[in-house]
Image (cartoon, rainbow, N blue to C red):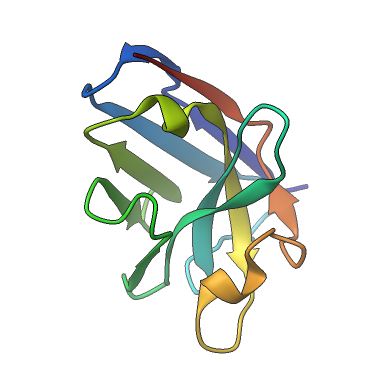
Length: 130
C-alpha cells in the first residue's frame, strides 16, 4: 500500500516562508520516480485545487495564484517532494495535500481538481495570518 505523508505546515504571518515536504513509501518497488507528483490545497469552504506539480524529469507547473512565490522540487532517490512557499498571503491558508501520480496529456493543470489522482496524503494545514 502506498502512503504519502506531508509535513511542514503551521501558522505563519503574511510575508513569511514555509517549506512543505511529502514522503512517499509503500508497496515494494512502487515509487513515483517516473511519474509527476504535485500539491493541491483546500481552503475553508472551497474545493481542493491544483497548486504545483513536478514531472519526473523536473519540469515544474504552477497555478497562477502561486507562480513566482512557490517552488516545487523533488528528490527521486529519496522518494520525496517539497514545496517552498515564500511571500505567503492570508489567501494561501488551506490544507495542502501531496498527490501522486498526476496523469495528464500535456499539462497537469488539466486535472485542476485532482480527479485522476490515485494517491493522496492526509494533508497539512497552513495558516497565514494578516
